[in-house]
Length: 286
Image 1 (cartoon, one colour):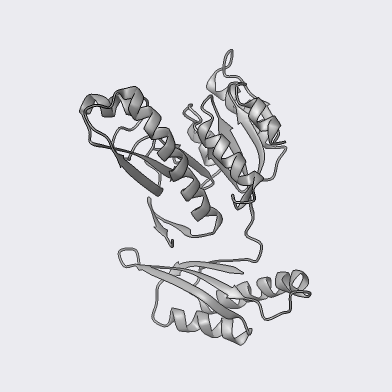
Image 2 (cartoon, rainbow, N blue to C red; image 1 turned 135 degrees about the horizontal axis):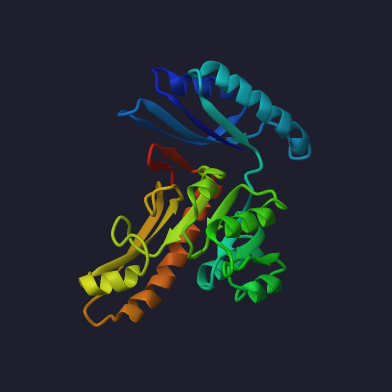
């Protein structure tokens, strides 16, 4: 069972939290906490072991989770956010364009039970990736942009999404800028992989930008999507070295490998409830 808490900080919070948990006979397997002193905010992630037997767990864990959540809120500052999640398996919808490497990695991880989530559908503004989705028995919906303005295109995407229940939307190399109206429908629920070590080389063609600048490092960034292009809270980043022998095409090829790795790491952190948002930055309990 995972418990995540976000609230105003005050003296004695950890003692109050652990006291409630001990009172309900849960064992604390791990606890991570952090205080943002600038905003006086407290963040915590706890992993608990249920006191019930395995046979009774499916029934009693649900009731126990609800009771524990209410009891924790009662000892925390007003406005505290508490989530007790005994079944942390998430559901995701993917938006894609033409590039297959991030989508393929996600589908492969799901196939072997290593994703920590289920892909409920894939929506693409080109039909090139429908075949790989079919091979993994994942619904694919082709919503072309041609012949539509942005409002009509996004309305068509939303109609497809309405048929599914999901926790997050993942932009797995979705190469279109979404409108503020679309983004506002899914606050802190959209994750993007950007082919650059942000804040460098924001926007299109970052590998060409990096090549022309003569950089010695390239990278990738996974972040939550906000209305500020490529400036949402960062979840994970990685870099790799390059040199003068790399062409822009070489950088793009190397970059695809790191994009896949960074997105996979970010999704694992989010699915495990290890990521908290504080203003435009994140607290990540790795």
